Image 1: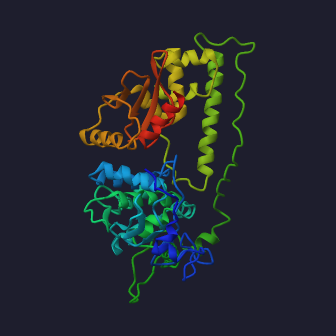
Image 2: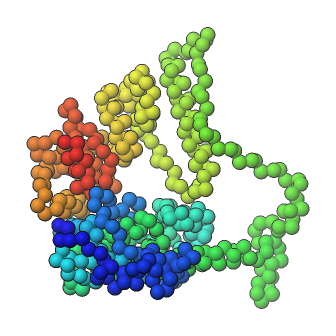
Length: 467
């Protein structure tokens, strides 16, 4: 239920009062940057109230989705989460203040009652920050990704391997609200949903919550790089601060390496990028093919290999390499679908179907699932599995809270990871990654009807629009 009238958070939000003209008294604009476009080293960033979010997901980035998963796994009352989503979608969250360990906003109920809401997240300790800075400084791609407002999964995985958990987990988001609720209420939930939108735009918001602002973090990384560059010289006879001789260092002194430059073989030149893969050769001709060899299929495989080689070369030459995760290794059945998605023609598609144990109809459905979600989409089409009790309870709760009060709720029958409309032709499938996939019955078979979404109501809306 939306507020009774349009309202401006600036009318009621003390944080927003400092930002009416886009600048606070300290010279920051609505996303916390100073007049030079830089973020302050410490303290606080304040974001102006975001517009209503009707018809869109709150989090599109994987780290924003992880933030919401921590909220939804922690909160005990799914009804409060549902009401919080309504508040956030209606624009009832005022300016959001982000500072180390805490986010704050004023949230308005539909009766215009205002509540100050806070969500707390534990800051990283000094030892944690030292380990995290070592991880980020060790790989230039991590710094480049953060500056590009991206948080690659490998960065979070490297930090976790070093004992630093960047993303919150179950129980990490603590709620405080002037409404008096002891658990996450609709107001703190709305604040969390709104923050997910801010995290999508800038992962430095999460790092500020963990205790370091962008400028402070980048200064620390620069100091680390400078200290590393100014370390003790390589070679035998290096001494410590007390003048005592140290052990021989690994490597070659710079002067020695420079003197040997003319006798060392040159490094191979970096290969140039390839705009398009090469054209596959035409086989056969005057020489008949060997028995059992389908010339057209072999030509297609050569062209496919060239296309994949081009993609691998482009990845190797990209600025993010080797930070980008390796693509998954496909099974022969998955690879057959990948190749069929390229549209090789009826004859080759028939060979791919037969080789992967499918008929033409099954391969066409598999290609559709692949185009919507790659290996994950194909798995949802072809695998039926039973979620663990905890995951099943979470999925059931998400479904129960998916529809607003007064909306017509479909009657769904649950079978393992699938919820089917009773007497209808629509189905929701729950993936192993916690996402929902819309399916519709076509000619007696279930077919994917759209891409996955984190919100079951959004997935059902795809089916309703088609119906």
